[in-house]
Length: 309
Ligand code: SF4
Image 1: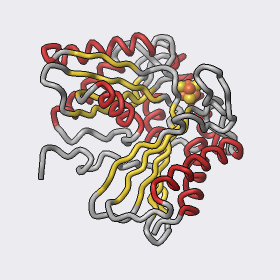
Image 2: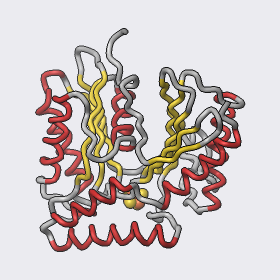
Image 3: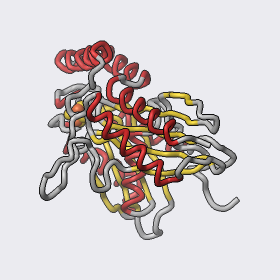
Image 4: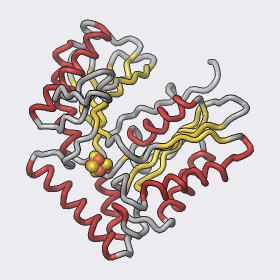
């Protein structure tokens, strides 16, 4: 059985590492963009972003003063036993959020939308969120924490089937123009695109695509993978650099996820995740050993399953 204390301790560690240590895949991609960027000012910005990553690790302080909105993704093995069940799991994750808001510290960003009341711990109504998925033939549980900036870079549009890929590209370019030219996404950013499902599903998938896949990872569907590559080139050829400067380095990666939609529509959600790309995963085993890693491994074959067995 996975003990509640193991969950609490691991979730605290996840928050500390996510806030401070940039994942290696992101750092390497920013290094590559800096080496290839032709615009002097954009290259200067990228080099400073890299220095900032180093300073955060050296000082053991968050990589951005805005520490985003902590959220969790739990992938639970079908045979996993969790002490206290799902209610205790959620209690532990909320407690870890409050504890590390004080200890790291994280900025207490979560406020009531009307009164602006702040518990000073990033916990409140529907906060932090916990999203779930399941895995067959497993008795472990993976928990991923993401600290995502929460204000800009997200959009939704209901396209029609006849809009097709050209309509999707138009929407993609519109969101670049809307957010990147003013540096509002704190780019370079990972852009997640959810296509299909319903309004809520495509938006959820776009966020998961932006937050829960390693940079360089391609969708297993070859057509979708080719579209990802095409949009990366399009995004970095649109004239935008980091933080609103002109250049050719606004896009860290594009990740696209698809879901079956109503035959009359093609809903699309887009989410951008800034260069302060904070994520960390732990696997909790039944014997209470833990294994930390940078790859969330959220999009498993089971999670992307199609039709019936
Ligand atoms: S978008 Fe990202 S880098 Fe920009 S202020 Fe928010 S958390 Fe920081």
